[in-house]
Length: 138
Image (tube, rainbow, N blue to C red; front, side, top):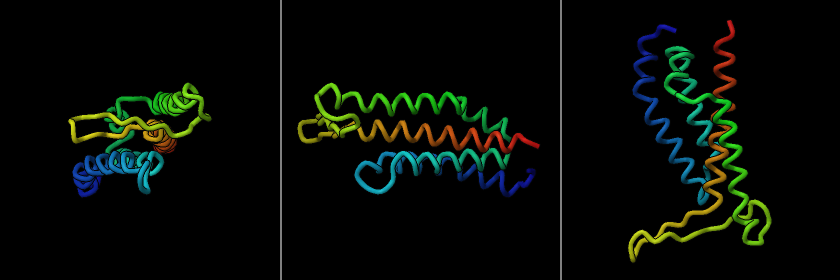
């Protein structure tokens, strides 16, 4: 597609869409959102880029093969279920760790966010592999 308006809008909208997808990912284990919605948002940003410029340009911008992203996401989701097993709980039970940053500031990190990161990568990889495959067919 050679639309100057679409290319210009994509250049300005691509970074905010990716930042918003990370926001949705990190927000998801406490409020609505998470890896699935974040992955769809990131995938839509790359799909818009592929539509505006080309699939080759979107692949170059991504720098990672979507199938490798799917495999990595599945591995991360699987790894998130191991800490509960090691502590005697059921697989994929949420376990939280309190990490002190300063004496008055602590950050809680848990297995649900690790699982959400895996889901994010799987959804992004599946969506991009489908979009790239359909866009390359002519």
